[in-house]
Length: 451
Image 1 (cartoon, rainbow, N blue to C red):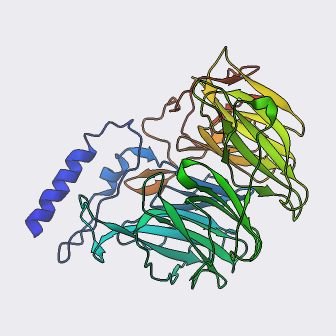
Image 2 (cartoon, one colour):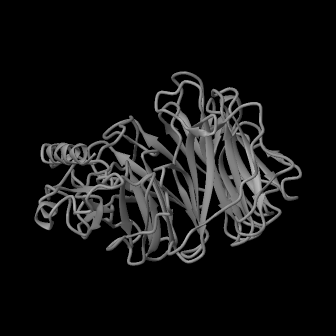
Image 3 (spheres, one colour):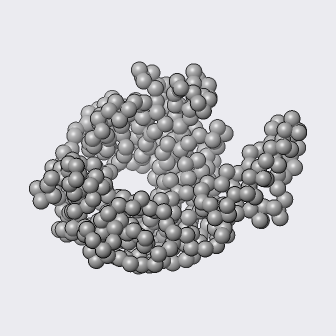
């Protein structure tokens, strides 16, 4: 066994020192030695110091308060309290290296992580298993990740197995909702809905649910929950006002001026108080026709909605990522070959995307803002901090050497072009900031801003 271990160490060293130093991606730390093997360190400090620093790709994130937020890499959970200058690993115990299906934090202390674990006949499944199932487990913390406990989920007895997808959302520190994905294709996939009233320690099946696969959950109170789902390949917005005893579908017809774009893709609603809220909806038309995005507003708690502002003339089948702060609709625009810009639309704005000058899209970046000036933006796994409303942005992507978090710059220390899925639309006037985005924390970059 000792000789196998020595051989594996030599293999790891060979791989590490032949990797292109500029390659980006998750750098997996070495695994611990087998039982009975020597506990001597795998690498000397000098060897570790020569290893490359890599940027950890951000899969999910949330800015909770100014300067405090979390990111998930898919199997690691990191927290910052100084706006990304330093990151702390607060990952829950994960001996099987399970994937994070969902992460939710109510505040910097209270958080929940839903794991998906591949099994077969109750045991871990082989990677090439043809008949397998997924088991989902929940961990929660009440002290900012210092300690974690395990939630008690009821057994699943459905006709079909569970998938590796799920969503967790809490209205407060006690009352929360969870969906577990039920396996199937795009036409038959569904979700099972659960609820808790003790902070996630125990869960029970909800009496009702939403059709199709649940993609988003907004938990407002222990009784009111909004759900975005995708039944039969479409998009549906539903709400329950009675603790999931029943759900009502909310239909938001496309404004006539954006025809033929009329097929909706709903976003999760945003409420600024008990009565006032917004929902961004992307509409697509037939083959070859332009898409549009509409921000709807409610002033009666979601019972009625009216179109409030429109972004039209988008490329075919484009859906937008956006956020609402106060009454301002903020959208991230990623032009081709240049840095992302923030587009801010205020009540009653009507803006059309251009078809010339530069190209880009509104779906490449995601936003989390706590005020109109302060927020985070994640573009293709690269996280940036904005503290001046979009005039500049600072790269705060977490970085690691040999799997250990560091504040050192990415190796090599140079500007690296952002990776984008380029489409063909732009906002007039076209923005033209510098062509590269450094991964190094502390480097500012200018953002074009339309308002």
